[in-house]
Length: 439
Image (cartoon, rainbow, N blue to C red; front, side, top):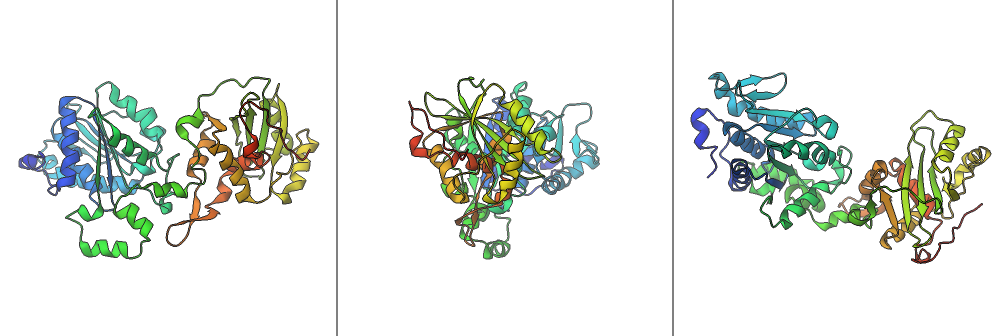
């Protein structure tokens, strides 16, 4: 039985938790009391009781003497949680059992480490400066993974603390506000929790319909204008593989094709892909192992605005110093004048052999499917683009053949310009790929 009800004698004002909330509350509190450093992943529908559940478990841990840190990627979401906290503990604050710091959004037991704090955080930098026994990530699908990997995980090591990740499967409409590199990172974490056999990880799932406190009429109004796809994700909280169909480059296997950096041998051939633009010029540098035909993306170039063509060309020469650059490709058919400008500064760039964007994309996908493309982990922007590049949905949420916000993906453009010069079926192991260029 959850102890929230038992603690009402000291003035806790929260709704009685329903069954699905009790499951993850009890898991977290049990892990804290046993000191086993558990990891809970909650996947729930919109207005399914996620934030109230987070408040319930935060109060449970706090009144039991633990230090709690709640994070959400938006001020609005944090404010919802903090409202529940102040309401829940208002009587205890008035009785001076606890002290409220309104300016910094925390409640503490004076003279102890016992504290509960709410914080807006969406990446590692915004997470720094705190510590906790219980760390709660709300709306985790919108949070950058490094918040957990770089700050959250080390934060819990010394005290064997507990982490709780709460999310709703992301929809295409949330893509614009998400800070995540991989739009499916929360889903992958949920799957990890499902497959865990150590009892340290636990997965919890409930839908919007499971919340007894949610008005059925209100829920019907929410659902009325939703597509079937949005209903499955946001109400039923289904993380189905259909989400993969949104991803343009779903053939990319992060587990095998994102690799540690290494020094590229001078004997390897080097290629470059280029996307032009005064505000967001980009370049991608790729090496090819002559023994296997595999491509290794080893350097990305995103200088921002303010550099001249001559300055870009000099930067490219420094990056490739000592290497044999065989192919440089980039730009659309209409951008020949820009290519000529680079040629005048000693960096000749050819027009890609293929003009159609989708056919260029097919060349990249073909090489990914053959497991011929590997990307250095240091290419953060390239990896982020690759894992966020989506097909534009139709009215029912089905993917079309148009890339959503295609102009944002500068490094993906570099890649498709470059790989359009290589036919996937000719990039074979044990042979040397003949580069095709317009030089």
